[in-house]
Image 1: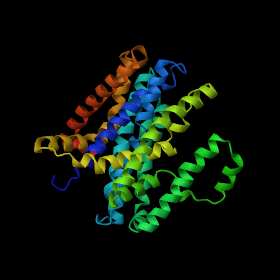
Image 2 (image 1 turned 90 degrees about the vertical axis):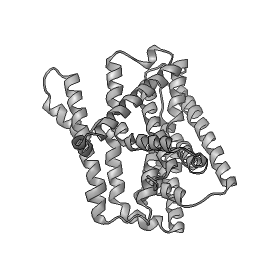
Image 3 (image 1 turned 180 degrees about the vertical axis):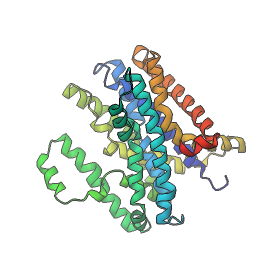
Length: 343
């Protein structure tokens, strides 16, 4: 317990709840009429909590890319990847079985196999994190060298964030074809967040730099909401361009949230009982992520739809309900030896 970094535990809990809230709000974002009060509320919540998945990846990078942590090639596969594979098999089976029971009168083997192989929509994260684990030994070599890490992060920001959204907004098809000729795919995707998590945890920023990061984070939140509103109304359909985890606006928000917890939240002193409660919540976070969509589906099955009520309140109420149900389930699984090993 004494070796734990409490701001990271709080960050993990916050990211977990943000994902739950995101999935509740996103459920009707595309269903509400554009420009209405309801749509704007869903857009607000969606814009507010886009940082969840990037934060998960950054936390993983913070620990697994740390050279002080001795990780062998064997550990990568026998400890980290194996855990994810077991979790995927178990949860994908459960979600596939539920989908089969809910959607078909009799067992549909083809649908079940397809659902199991590809996984429930949110289990994409498990595929992605395994990919990062596979290249972790290479990334550790980059992360340990500050200049190499900064160069890598610069390339990642340019080719994963800035260029793609510029190409999409201005429809620069020719530029897209030209950029792809360089085959710089190693810098694409979540690898930037992974390396960035270690970089942000390792190196210290002075107060002036932190304030700039916070301002950019606030601007990023505003831009996510405003630009999503503008582009959706202009095209006549809900447009998620600025919701992308790789969009510059989401990227700066994620960096700002991580930085805020490291420098500001870490100053808060907690007593022993509160700290223990935080550790328990943090330890439950991964399973909360895995199980939470069952509760989303149960609530919809019960006829509770956030569109049928004031979404400003119903989204929060449903998100808290889903989170608490998922927390209770996760806690019970963690207290059951057999289930703890496979779920």
